[in-house]
Length: 277
Length: 300
Image (cartoon, rainbow over all chains, first blue to last red; front, top):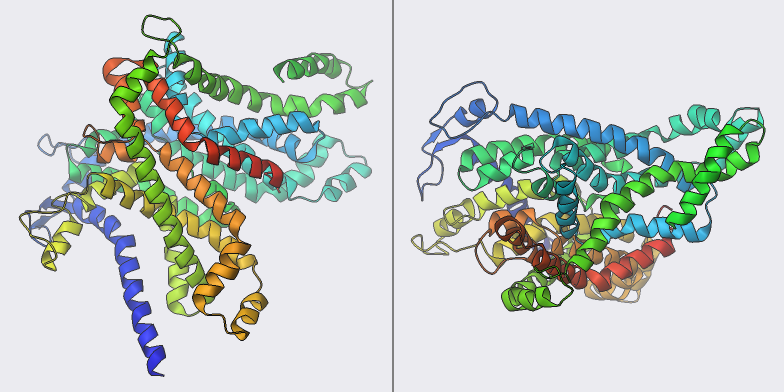
């Protein structure tokens, strides 16, 4: 009896340490986003208010805060992400279907698989550096289109993995049944396979959306200084204005947390680790 | 392979035209038409620049084939290369130990504490590194919350706060982000182990450490190795967090050096040589990863 009480105490102490290290960094971000004056070493800010929030959301336009309206950056990120989702899914769904359901010679399939595994295994930054050189030659650096292409590469790998595993999980008998009563392959896909695989495909699309919203390294090399997405705004604010940077960081993590809670059960664990490198 | 694809596509064009009369040949080339756009995007926008980073690392400033970039890289950045390797290995090691402990706890415990841990730990997985970078900048700053708390607890001198914008802060942030991801993967593996194994071990008198080292870890070796590989490889390539936390100070990771080489000097030769060093750092684990994923069939 005494021993189990002792164990419970230890468990609660470790639990508290765990909670502290998990949430204190987030809490720090939250407090800084509303701290108007905070002198060291006071435990809490002397003056709090939502001035930086109003400024970042474009509600006020003060010149003294050193914070800008982030709505245009947010809309740019949103627009890029939506286009990236559309292009990526239009490419990944056919590829995933072919890899999961159709006959491809083993050797060729192996080569394609390696091609889609390499970006995950090796650091991507040197690739972006050379992509930037390539893009400079054809006038794509510093353009939104160039940034969309970079996000496309980053997302496509994951999208093809997830769509392929979604399609492979669907028993072939279903489509065969549809075809045996005279449906074409395309019609069988549209009427049978697509509706069943919808949850997996939507999860994949949301994952691509977030990958694009959070993408940093590729945008840094190909987009800056002309394409300022929300992560780039956060990066520029980070060194100079801790309150404004905290507000931007919170704005950036809201969609991540919301969407991921909704779709996490559809995603395979291995895919999640590559978020926002 | 490109040739192969081209041939297939050439067949494809005639196949589509004659699709009604020759449905068989259409069905044969359909897979290639469907994978073609995805493969082309990866070939052009990933594989080509990836291979370019190798051969450009051997082209000197004067445009001739030489090892000059490697000589310069080793002269200027050999300490940073070791720093990157050290911080990554340390972070991966701590994250692995921590995540195995938490996963064991979640596997063997019940009750509201274990349940809340089982849900809450997932949070960092969903946060991008750029947000984590800003979070750690404010949390670990000389006048940040961690130093404030340590000072209030009289653990440090308030006039001399600890400096975390170095390998310590980097390791902390890396572990904060990646340990939860490892817990997620390792937990999945632990769930596969039937309770009867653990019960059987307990009945012959096995204690917790023995259950961990003799049953849980050995039976999940592949899962744990894949988790270690993914974390190590992604940390070697992580750019935003070290760039925002340490920036221009020294020592710093190779990724930050690459950015400086490109942005301040336009020196793509040395940047690419540094890139090749980062490939070498992950090479063993990367090959292991690709091989094991191929064996697994990747999509099953």
